[in-house]
Image (tube, rainbow, N blue to C red; front, side):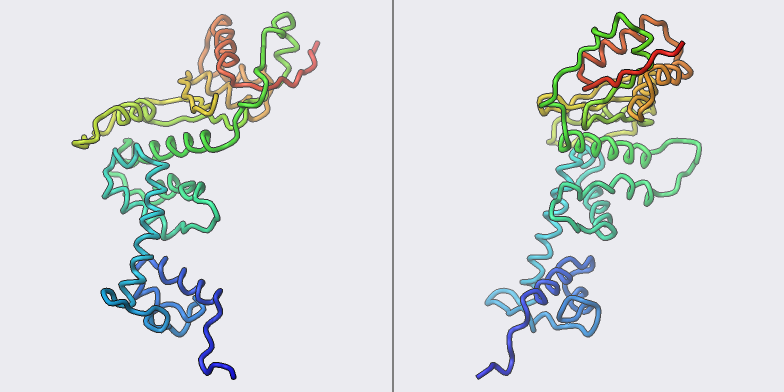
Length: 298
């Protein structure tokens, strides 16, 4: 004999549970906004799905899961942006992060990509500037968030650990062919630029005491150019001149060495010896994994 009140389908309960505990205004609003299967419609009372305990009513019991859900997401974002947390303070960071999660909820099986859009969110939601010609605190916060996400991507992404080291000395005897060639940058390597000295700030905050937590002032804007690479599973930060950054950006886009240097020299005129020093350092730091040899013209 069948039961007059058969249990609800498990997938239906799961959809309702997820919709309610992830609602930004709390479980009561979440339950009021969702029907029994988690879709928008006739609301289901929390007590119809969750029983009370001797100490907590149904709504309070469900709130435990909602609080834990957002606490876990905020913790994950804080792990990706630890220097930003210490710079703006936990309360401000959690407020920004919670607002971010409302427009960018977790939709993937992994939390590794949860913070991917956070710098862009900060840029879109930043307060208006008092003076559009001056860089302000919000600009710095956005730069710092971009920097920490870039570090995270380099650390968590592909790297050159299992690839052979490229020796450029074999091309010293044929500079024309080398100039017409293309260099393949190491996997995971990123080129980064910012209006503020975010790498220096990163070092300062990381080495500062946490108790008491110092307050940080807006640093003076200084154009910053970096190459971010990974070696032996350690992320390395390489300061670059504006010319180096331009040349490496062109190389990364697939341009020949000749075209890349032409773009760099248009920005930062340097002597041939300095260019040679660039390539020596880049090769020594493992920036490249292969050469696509070109054809000499003329």
